[in-house]
Amino acid sequence: MMDRFSFEVTARDGLARRGAIRTPRGEIRTPAFMPVGTAATVKAMTPESVRATGADILLGNTYHLMLRPGAERVARLGGLHRFMNWERPILTDSGGFQVMSLSGLRKLSEEGVRFKSHIDGSEHHLTPERSMEIQRLLGSDIVMCFDECTEFPAPKADAAKSMALSMRWAARSREAFGDRPGHALFGIQQGSVFRDLREESSSALKDVGFDGYAIGGLAVGEGQAAMLDVLDYAPGMLPADHPRYLMGVGKPDDIVGAVMRGVDMFDCVLPSRSGRTGQALTRRGAVNIKNARHADDIRPLDEDCGCPACQSYSRAYLHHVFKAGEIISSMLLTWHNLHYYQSLMQGLREAIEAGALAAFVAEFEATRAEGDIEPL
Ligand SMILES: [Zn+2]
Image (cartoon, helix red, strand yellow):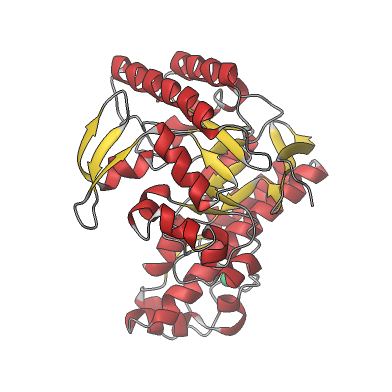
C-alpha cells in the first residue's frame, strides 16, 4: 500500500487532464466527481451503492459533523471512514462556507468565526487551527484550508480584503496541519471575479505550498458565463503538477466546461438533492418526474443508462412513487443521478485519453439540445 499522497497527469487533450491521485486509501481517477456525504451519509444511498455508481471519493462537511455527532465522538468511534462504512478516500471541507450560509449570529475576526449552531443554538468558535484539528479527528484524507467564502457580488475592495484574510488563514492552516504522510492539504484560491486578485491569491498559496489547489468562491450566484470567464484563466494560475479542484460545481455542463479548462476535481449536492425533489439529470437534460406526462409511460428514464432505476423501473413507476411520497423514489432517482454523473466523468476521462474530447463534448451538447424523448 502506498503511504504517500501523489498526483500524476497521464494524458492531456487541450487544457483538459486525465490523471490519478494516489492515496493510502485508494486511487482517485481524475477528472473526478465527489458525491456529497454531508452528515456522514450520501442521503438515500448506502456506501456500497455509492461505490457501485463509480465514485472513488466522497466529500464530508466539517460544519455538520462538528455539530452533530461531534468530531471528538467520530474519532472515538474509529474515524469517519469506519463510522460511515466508506473505506475509500474522503475529502472534508473546512466548515467556512457553511458557517457563513447556515449558522446564525456570526462574528468574524482575524482569529476566526464565532457562530451559533443552526441545530441547537450552541456557541462555537471555528479557526484555521480548530478546522485542521476537526478534519484530523475525522480522519479526512484530503483536508481543505479554512477560508472565508467571499460574498457575491462583492465590491473589489471587499473581495480583496476577504481574499487577504483567507490567505493569512491558509498559512495558519498549513502550519497547524503539520506533516501528515498520506494525507493532503489543499489551498483555496479566492478573489471573486477579479483576475488580479485571483493571481495574487495564487501567488500567496504557491509561496506556502500545498498538495493540491482549489478554486473557491464560484457557483455562488455569478452565473455560468461569469464562472467560465474566471475559469478561462484561474486554473492556469495554479501549479500544473498538482490537482485542481473546483469547489461546489456543478451542473453537468458546468463540469464539462471546467474540465475543458483544466480542472480535475468537482463536488456538488445537485445530483443527490435533485434525486430527492423528483428531478432526474440525464444525457438529455433534466427530467421532472413529477410531470403528469410520465404517469402512463412504460419506458425507462434513459434506455441507455445502466443504473438500477433505468434497468428495472418505468417512468410511470418513478412518477407514482414520487407522488406517493415513497422513500424508494429518493433512492432510485439519487442512484440514477449519481450514476449519470459518474458515467459522464468516465466518458470525459476516456475522451481525454483518446484525444477525442472535442467530439465527446459536441455529442454531449447535441444530445442535450435534442431534449427529453417525446411523450407517448
Ligand atoms: Zn439511470
